Length: 110
Image 1 (cartoon, rainbow, N blue to C red):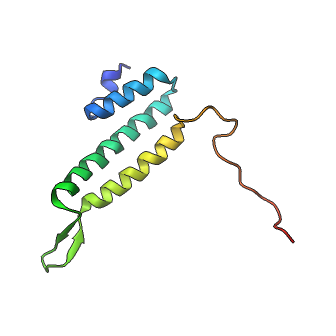
Image 2: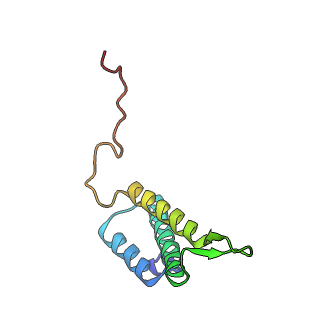
């Protein structure tokens, strides 16, 4: 599938990032899906951030009580998902023997 088709719906910045990653890394199909999902979450976080910057993080409801804007949750959730997908792709580290550190299982000091 062509890169242009893959990046449809992404911002220009995210599309450029995806193209850059695809040029510099050999990814399997499931990794490409993770990459595209990460890019779309980056875009969602950026869109939410723009609304928060423009309108603030809080609004007053009909009773005059402050409430967080829905974009605050969108920004938070999209940022978390993006960072987890990026960690899963492991684009910033050399290939390790194990992608995750092993847990220490054993008896504590006596």
